[in-house]
Length: 437
Image (cartoon, rainbow, N blue to C red):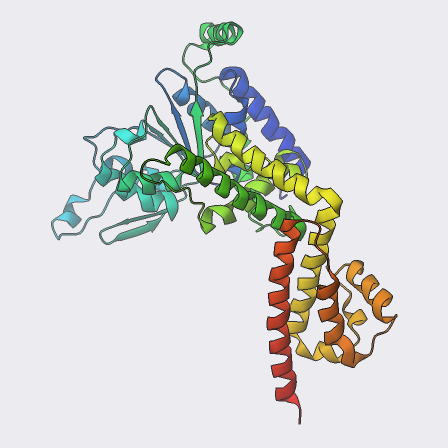
């Protein structure tokens, strides 16, 4: 990375983040998983909600997390029902108000801050919470005629309870990471907490080293695939595997909800395409925390950071069950290899669809880039080393016909690939007929 960030490699960034997490863990005892989740929220520039009963050190945890960074403005507020939006956005410009225009003086507000800490967020009234939605999601203040961008990176909000309404459901959707902090009554843990309290009281500890906010922004750019120098890669096979795990978890959650409410109104668990897409950022963040420039299967096992509530064992266990079930199914009889072959085959079809004229060439000439040797080895075995050009369609069709899936996940993928093949052949035949004299 560039010299302005002070980070020279993904490995170094991983070490610094682990050291920061370890320091936070020394101040807030026995919260390692929630701390890792919080670091992921910072790396992905998403918001986090911490819920617990009173006195569980939620505020201390949030303050200690933000204290690890240098060069970022922090907006703090204790929410209450009497507050109006100007508590968060700055006071109204009275001169503009005379003309019926709502304009906030945003200096020192959440709008001009990189970090935000909202304590007891559900104590705020719905009118104020609704006003916060655009700042949290679009990073823009949009009120009246005022429409200004915000540098807001991450907000950590805390609450002793959940208040469910139409507005709070929309608010909860803005908090990608959620955790419940349960009181720990283990005597040794309580002893360690008492030790820290005697040393620091309720104050945050001053870290020996802070991470520049510019470094965090740069790491976020890498995770989002916006950095030209560093890349954290996700293979096609792993991408497909991840989406199957997410779908299976959604199925298990809904089945669990149905079993619990079989005699009453049915509730529904839904993972939006937006949340599912953002899970890719989390995958790359998890790889970065391990010092890797590529995502592996085990990274997907921790996607419960956004799809479940950390601290609720039942939800986390359900996600782990979904992950293990799909992993075991695809590991058996080399299912992952079959997924890779079929996905590579779709890459070949996409190349043909983009350039229909390639169907007039021997298919073996297309074996470059991400297209693996497996398909062309099959071609040589089935049709010889150099198939006639007029048999290209037959070769492609025969490959799909002869492909025998080893598990349900691969069988479903094969059906999808068959549809892609049929659509590709329609496009190719239309284009080739159009260009013929």
